[in-house]
Image 1 (cartoon, rainbow, N blue to C red):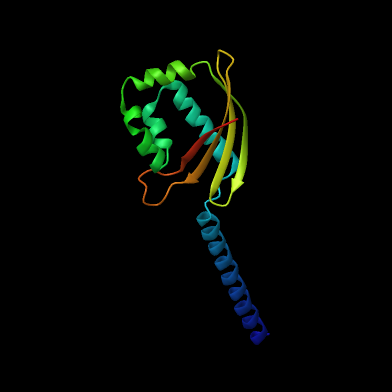
Image 2: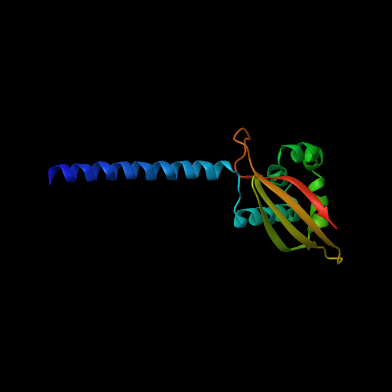
Length: 147
């Protein structure tokens, strides 16, 4: 009974250690792929749209990736630009928000309907922020109007 019992506990410990190693490696790999869940991606775009509607230029700037942030920094830093954004997006409706998975992020396509009836379809490419970035979470790295 003694040798069998100790062999079982050694095998159990080995199996447990292997299982824990698998879980740790899986979580590290899954986190490093940059994949973004659908709910997080679509919710992020909805928050971005709400920031545009409110004229919250600081939030808009914070949600952009480094290249877009640099491109729009001067406009979004202008105090009058907040009112400009509110005048454009107030009363606009975001609808038909669709998620697309990518190996290093996500693509979210959304439609905008403005009060005057104008319709726009926009595609956002999202990525996880880099470790070196001072902000956590997601970032819009490209924004393209679709035909």
